[in-house]
Image (cartoon, rainbow, N blue to C red; front, side, top):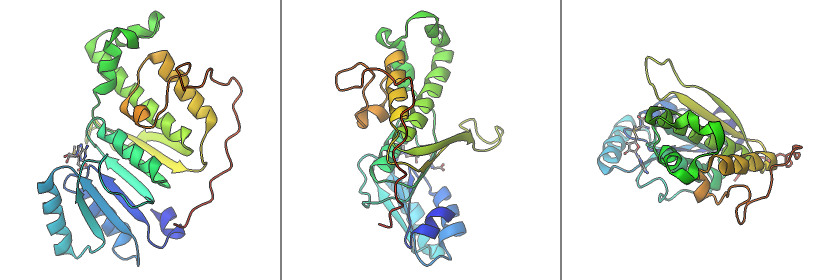
Length: 247
Ligand SMILES: C[S@@+](CC[C@H](N)C(=O)[O-])C[C@H]1O[C@@H](n2cnc3c(N)ncnc32)[C@H](O)[C@@H]1O
């Protein structure tokens, strides 16, 4: 927040899958309430939650909080997002949030994924099983759920890197507060990162999964039609850092 507030007069913060918008209220209170500019847009699929949060914002005179009832992948976003956050956006809603961040050039991304089922289901399919002893990692349903969740988040982090983000994966809070505790932070420092993209394509090919995030962004497994053939053994230098945009 401090970074975007230094560089943009009117930073736009998006809270995707905002629920009661508690996270948005905290961010607004801490960073936007006393600032001259900046807006916080909450996107939530359930209209009753949007209405309740809207009423609370009016009572608090948080005039630059906006609310939209929409699915994250169908919401109307301004052309440029500066910060996108998604706290426990259910299942693949986190992927939709990441797509919005990437497409709208968000400078910073902070997501704490919820439980995930999509990749575990793909691992269950025969075609998605890697050859050899790797598949032993997810023979049992419990392991498949955990491994699927882990693989999903590895793919999310790598996808952000492929689109030029510097990524930090860390813990959100103490385990006594939440079991959904993985915080993925991204800061855009390059236009893209070819090495990360090749690694991602290799990982998709080796595991046989194709989660919503990479499908939506058109990232194909290595060796697939339209995909790149082999991961580079030597890293390709990253593109020049993107000039901070003032739009
Ligand atoms: C577990 S709650 C988290 C709410 C809030 N971020 C928080 O941490 O308090 C997930 C919220 O995301 C919303 N949601 C899930 N999928 C969504 C989607 N595709 N589009 C919009 N909202 C979605 C749900 O309605 C729910 O309110």
